Structures are given as structure tokens and as C-alpha cells.
Amino acid sequence: MKAISRRKFVQTSVKIGAAALLPSVLRAETPAAAGEKLVGLQIGAISFVDEGINQVLDNIQERGQVNTLFLATFTYDTGIGGRQLPGYPFPDHGKQEYLDFRGGNFATPHAQFYKNTILKNTKAPDHGDWDMLAAVLPEAKKRGLKTYVFNQDSFTWHKDTPHIAELQETGIYGQHIESCCDLNPDYINFVSGMTKDICSSYDIDGLMWSSERQGPFNNAIQPFKGERPTNRITCFCKHHRKAAKERGIDVERALEGYRKLVDFSRASTQGERPVDGYFSSFWRILTDYPEILAYEKLWTEGNHATYANVYHSAKEAKPSIQAGFHIWHSNSLSPFTKAEMPYERLAYADFIKPVVYNIVGGSRYAGYINAAASTVFRDVPAEEYLRLNNHLMNYGDMSLKDLGKDGMPEEYVTLETKRALDSVKGKTKIYTGLDIDIPAKPENKQTSPEDVYRSTMNALKAGAEGVIFSRKYSEMKLPNIAGGGKAIKDFYAGK
Image (cartoon, helix red, strand yellow):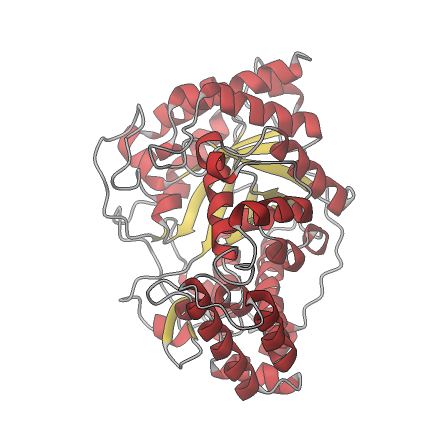
């Protein structure tokens, strides 16, 4: 396996048109028998261990009309791979106890794919030598189910993973950050090797990559809580410093600017209003230190290059595989994220899953509004800033006090699905990501079958080529999965 140079990696520009994905059916008698829409559901290894493979597959096929599995194969995130989060009610299936989740690779790493990286073995210790893909794939194929892996770029790794510290990011004060650096050659080669390993070693149909991280600018303007935001303002390691120098970016000036942004965010969070107001002071820092946005661009392009690395590695290993991307929820909440993660720049993929979680979305959107109104936009009352941001995001009126308990308005799924479709212009498939039972505080909106029915129907009627029920089966109640299944049936029945 040939190593990828850091310079070539950063400069990657992908111009490959995506082939259309037409998923095959589950069973002849299902509404999806024509193969017109992908109906996916994300599942972690623990569900198969707890309930048995065939019981899980029975539940999701019969209730959700699911024709495609999205197996959380590489993840350190308990929100993707574990049981229910501690403190939240258990669903109506699976073991009724919380889990000390560890994570890693729930397939089997094959040594020949990791020759060009010091990160050799990330096998998850949770279930010993058990291999989720080897166990689930044969049963899925018997049922006509497609199987995609869901791999995730993680914030945190096992601290005892050999050599992991050598791959991780460096913060603005020289501190060690647990997320891995997109420009580190060992991380580049690990991601490529792992992708090729899974795509070559298993007869899977597709792969979805997720990276729910953002650059230093967006992290620097977050409200200051404890160590945040300083523990996410990255990366100033030797690889990023070298890349910055090649671009003519003064790293020390960038560091000085980011530290001023941190001071601004800390003072703003505490209500210390500058003489000229919050926004003017924020803008002054940006104009005084243009290196801030230059460095943000550098980080973002490195992160985007990892997406391209995954896509090309998957296609090199198996040209027929469907390789695509999960795009995190912030893309439909923040105009800053939306600007830096335009769907059209990722339309070389075979599919994109825009996260459009409308049920839990209300509380998340309220959280974003309150955060933005605590720093950069603190001159604007939060309720008024909500109205401004709604205009920026092309949303209708909402009430900040009601967002948590009501969720996002019904048209949110339709608007965001259409935005994604309009952005990619038919170059790739859009599989709308819909939430089912993501844990929410008791005072906030809880999932019902009717909610899932409406969001599923709205995504399909908006033109999505498929839907992916998220975040994970081990959180979901069976009647709520059935709400999505009913929408699939009714859609095909023309209701």
C-alpha cells in the first residue's frame, strides 16, 4: 500500500461524477420491492450481541421496512455504538442495563493494510474477537438486505491505544487534544488502510464516513465553559505548521488571533460588553488577524481531504462499492457551518446523508441560538437572533421558548431535503437522516410514531432517494420504528 504524501493529500481536488445507487429489495412482498428508495437504519454491535442477529433483523424489517443496514463498524462514540446513554429510559427491547462502552473497530483489522501507519490494531475490546461484519453479513444476505458500514472520525480514542498520541491534534496553547490530525501522514494512511481493509475483506455494499468536527474558528466563538472552547481549537502540530508556511500563513499571528478570540468569547460569555459592542469587537479581531480565517480554511480543507481519502480508498479497494458521507446536524443549524460544508463540494460521493433530525432538532437549534447569542451576537436578544438566523437559514418563524418541547417545524425536513437536492443537482443521491428516540431531557420533545411517520413521508415527498433512521437501534422504541415503516408503505401506496 503506497503512502500518501501530506502535500498531495491537502491539495486533493475530486472531480469524479457519482454513479446512481439503486438498492435492491428486502423481500418481494415489501413496499420497497421496486427498489426505488433506500430505507436504512443505523445499528451498533451491542444490539446483535444482546438480542441476536435474526431478532434484530426481524424487528427492523417487519416494523421499519428497512432494506439497508448501516453497521457502526469503527466508532468510539457511545452515541453510535453503545446501548442507551446512562440516565435515559431504556427502549422496549435489548438488555435493560447501561454499558461501559469502549469502541474501536468492530470488524477484524488485517495487518497487511496497516503497513504504512504506526496505528496497527484498533480492534474494539468490547466483545472479544467477535466480528460484527463476519457475523451479520451472511444473515443479511439471506434476507436480501444491503449492508453498509458506518465509520466515524472520533473526538476521542482509547488513551491506551499504542502510538495514538503521535497522531492527535495540538491546541493553541500547545496542549494535547484527543482528536486525530487530518494532516498527519500516519492518520492519513490509517484511514486509507482501514477503509481498504473493510471494503476488501468483507462483501459489503457501501460505506458511510462521518466527521462531526469543525475548525478552529467555529470552536473559538463558542461560549466559554470550563476548558471549552480552548480544547477544540486545533490544529497547530508540526504538520499543520508546515502546511501553513507553504501557504504563506504566519502561524504565530494566527495563534495570537485565536487567543484573542478566546479572550473575547470568555468575556462575552460573562457579559463583559466591549465599548463598541460584541459584534464590532469580534469583527475587529478578524480584520486585525486575517490569519484566523486563513488557518480555518487550511484546517477545513484538510478535513475535506479526509473525506476524499475515504472515497478514493473505498473505490480503489472495490470500484462497485457505494461510498458516501454523513453530514452532521450543525450544517442545518449554523450559517457558518453551512458555508464551510456545501453539499455540492461533496457531490463526487455516491450519496450524502444530511442530518435533518427534526424531533431532537428543536433543542439543538435552541442550543445553537443561545450559544451564538452569548458571544458574537450578544448585542441581539436571543429571541431576536433566532429570527435573524431563521432568515439566514431560510426557515419560517419559531419561538425560542417552544423549540425544545415542540421540535423543529414540520417543514424543516422538507426544506433541508430540497436544499440538499438542489445543491447536488442530481450528481449524487440524497438519503435524508431522520431521528428516532435520540435521548432528550424530559421537558423536551420525545419521539412518537406519528413524528417518525411525518418526517419520513416529508423526506420522501421532497424527493429524497432514501432515508436513514438514526442514531442507533439500541435507542429506538419499536413502535416508533414502525411509524417510519408505515410511511414507507403509504408512500408506495400513493397516500
